[in-house]
Length: 98
Image (cartoon, rainbow, N blue to C red; front, side):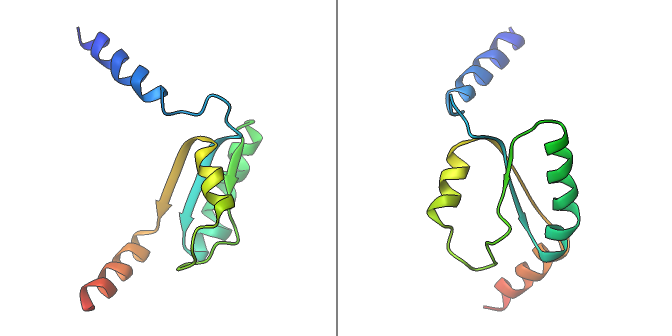
């Protein structure tokens, strides 16, 4: 029974995955230090394994998401989103002061 439930859940989830995707992964990150270090190595490693990955190096903190970026998200099979703990703590403190 459990495997049937899992199958149903996963098969209904696949409905949301684009049939023809441009990218396998949409890589989203926050922080200059991740842009040049961790993100670079992750992006390079995925590429070496033949995984088509989108990452935007031009979007800065606080900027609106461009239509090009929204299209890349829609055309990706999955997303990887990460942020450094220090960024989250700092931003959380700033929000609490407002």
